[in-house]
Length: 112
Image 1 (tube, one colour):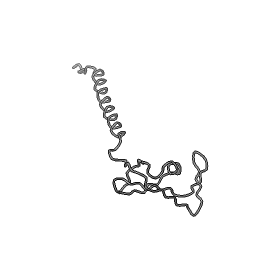
Image 2 (spheres, helix red, strand yellow):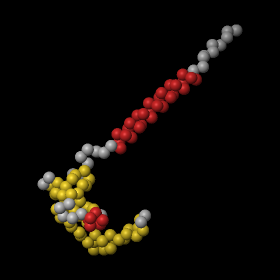
Image 3 (cartoon, rainbow, N blue to C red):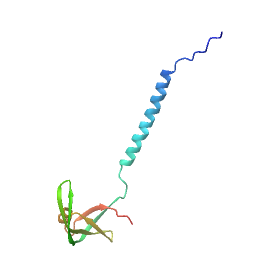
Image 4 (cartoon, helix red, strand yellow):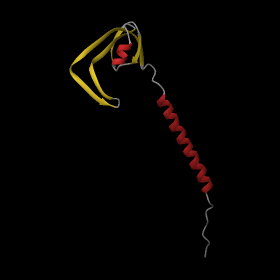
C-alpha cells in the first residue's frame, strides 16, 4: 500500500500572510478616516455684518431639550456682506446679541 503524501505545515506562512493583509486593510482604513476628517476648502465665508433683523413669532414656541425648557421668541438673522454679495444668516440668540453691525462674521457657505 502507498503511503499518503503529507503536506508540510503552513501555519507560520499563513500567519504572516494574514498579518500583512490585516495591516494593509488597517492602514487603508486609517488613511480614509484621516482624509474624511480634513476640512473642506472654501466651506466657510468671511464677511461683515451690515444689518441685524429680528422677526418675532406670532405663537410662543417651547422646546424641551438637554438643558431643560427653552422658549424661542423669534428668528434672528444677520445680513452679511461678502465681497459685494449679501447673505442672510440665521443665528441663535446668543450670537445675535454678541455681534454688532460692522463686526466680522465667519459662517458656513450656504447651498446655492
